Image 1: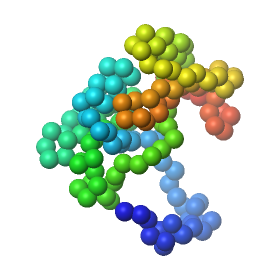
Image 2: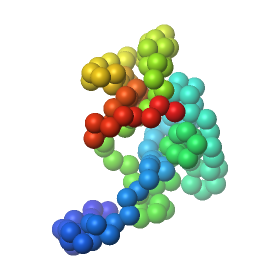
Image 3: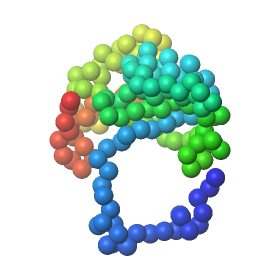
Image 4: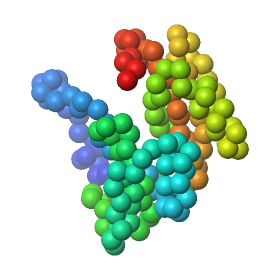
Length: 158
């Protein structure tokens, strides 16, 4: 369901912007997938994400752990839409990125290539590098090592 013009035209005042609580991180992101089993295999076996939870009821879905407190959800179209919170539905996006520990990118790239994945690599300088591959649904996944953040600060590498 498209956002209403009143929703898209709302601009927070400077005072409202200052009063906003800054989120501390990404908790979850959900992808709509055509084949739940194939997508779970990709993210579990290829990317290495462990299963955190599974919904096997009338809204099937799989939740995979991104570190200790973040999650990637996978669900088929029938789990979204009219039965989802706020009518959540699939949509196009550019890509999403998962951070790897420093020093892990080369071995990860080599492993993915051995498994037959086409991998594109980018070097952004200053130790910031990434590889890109496509999941079974055409979503572009970036796996990245970072020494610096967008604001130029030093990245933690836990």
